[in-house]
Amino acid sequence: MSVVIVGGNDCMVCRYKNLCKEYDCKAKVFTQVPSDFKSKIGFPDLVVLFTSTVSHSMVRCAVKEAQRKNAVIVRSHTSSSAALKSILDGHVEC
Image 1 (cartoon, rainbow, N blue to C red):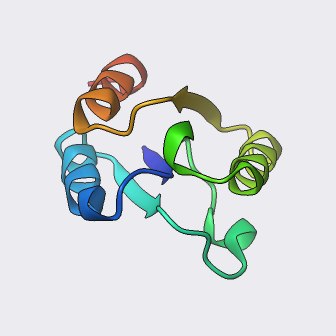
Image 2 (tube, one colour):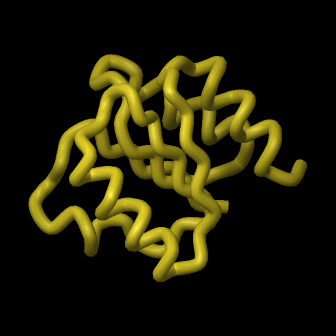
């Protein structure tokens, strides 16, 4: 399963990726808007939006691409590793 995480804290990127590895997921983490963000999202199965730490324009772009690629979208106001763990518990089949 592939996961795209939009938002979050820069210092937590490694933690987010390691937590996704524990669930056998490949993860891309975008804490800042990269150039050509739309094409870098790829074809994820799950898009996690940490809404408290991301701009509205980045959320709109991520949601639009996720809908276009039929990905599941999950929004979370907190960007903690516990929040990501609970999201992965609910959406990743073990």
